[in-house]
Image (tube, rainbow over all chains, first blue to last red; front, side, top):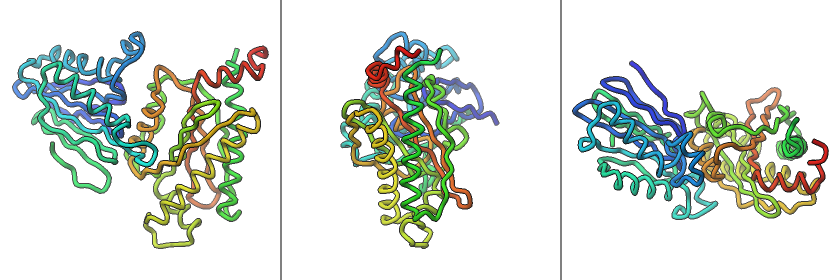
Length: 160
Length: 200
């Protein structure tokens, strides 16, 4: 079955079947959007919350939450999803080096807040999450079922 | 024409990595001969920097991370694959329980700290800059997550200068990468102060 990897800053969409996968989520956030009716799934791997340079962000909108979430929603709609059926699941936003800075001032924490803010703005409900903590994650979205699985080293895969 | 800043960083990288390798070799009691793959200072796009762990993103690693402040800012990391970290910890602590316990982790953190500060000291004495390392952060996690968190800590925008040194021992599975992400503007300024701009 088709597996599509979503690298940092990318946005990818699949319909009907296959799996969207993003690996190496540390402070980054994996965002999975899904429309159960049309079986359209879209995934982003968000690096930071806010873009500072519009020209840069327009080349890789998926890198930042403020440009990435609207672009992700657009991509899902273009592939046939319907706005009011979209739901979001998010994973990541960890703080891997807790002795360097407090978690509240870390990038992971800021990323979670920015992604939540942008999803609220886009009126897409968050129906599952595996965020914060101090370990990295991998996220998979199975397109035929909408099932989102999060894995971490030394832990059982978890459905969110 | 090559950017004088990159030439400077290349030179600093070579010398810094040499000092780091000597420090590591001493810590390992001279038992292991270290080989270095000489770094190339490169200005690379974000997407390329994001993918330098490609193929090993899910492999467990030990990452030691320090940020640098003072006259110039930057981010430094020392990343070892887990089996390599275990082998190094065993040599450092003479404990062969084969697990990455607290003592092993603290020995690795200290090893990373010494390597990074040796690298920085070499840079400081060559340029007369004050470069102050933070306390070292240590994480045991997927390579991709460790590297990604370091890039995010550095708030990398469109492109980044990366100086990556790979090292390994001849006979033993101790190896890893030393990564240096210098702040663009700071080193641009330093290259100018050192008069390197005129060489272009």
